[in-house]
Length: 407
Image (cartoon, rainbow, N blue to C red; front, side, top):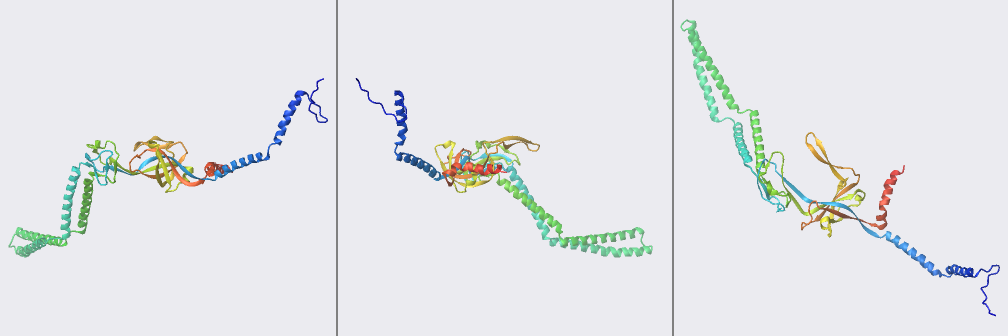
């Protein structure tokens, strides 16, 4: 008779399960007993790793980070001069070409000066005449003029000394009926004429001795000053027919030689040539207004223009604009009409996004950087913690926007 192995004993009070149920219960019992048998140090290691990971993250938040801010920029020359004509005339010659380097005082162009030289010479002649007349008035009468006036007085006195007694004699003879009425009248008329000539000669002598009136001298002096100012003005006009460069720089006006033969109208101050010195160039960086408070004069700036995307140019902040303005990316233009000046273009923008212009300077000895080039720049600021860099926008929004919402 075959013997069978005894099955597992069941606990007291527990009904034995079927064969299939016995195997399943044993598997579940092993799974439930497994955690109880895992070593304690594994659980501690897992907690330590989590705490270490969290500590690393928290510690990393306090790592100093060299924070930089910036925005788009545009290059501008440090020095730019616009050479304009202040006189009327024909451009006779242009002595420079586009891209040529010129020094301060070097001739750029020449305007025909025949009209201005003619005006100068004519005014100089009038000035010399006025000065001569003023000298005569200030010098007073000549000795010869006084002597002649005295001689005229003496002649008149002599004539009156003869005609006066003669008129008396003729009057006495007329009472005696010895001369006619006509003879008496002639004698009296001659006496009166001699008396008038004496008075005229005496007045002329007084006038010659008194010289010119102060008002006449003042008027002539004013005329001399007016002519001197006019001569100075014409001299300046003649000098300005030769146009020179006020600075060292490069000619940037396109096709500048085509200006030869152009007639410049008076009062328009026509633009002839533009000269730029870009050996040191400015980068005007548009910094968002929320970051503008961190910018300091003297801070280092890094510039990457679109034309040289694989190079970084270094410079320094030299000034910060005193006002915030609209971002040029959002700015547009509109045409307005004025009754006196006609149509004009004005800048408009529908955006409220503001930027602060930060002026920086970069050395440009090789001339790679050109005026009006654009790109992006970064400006170094103070060192901040990583958590400050990450959470400052949220903190700023809460300190401004949420503060505004709180009644």
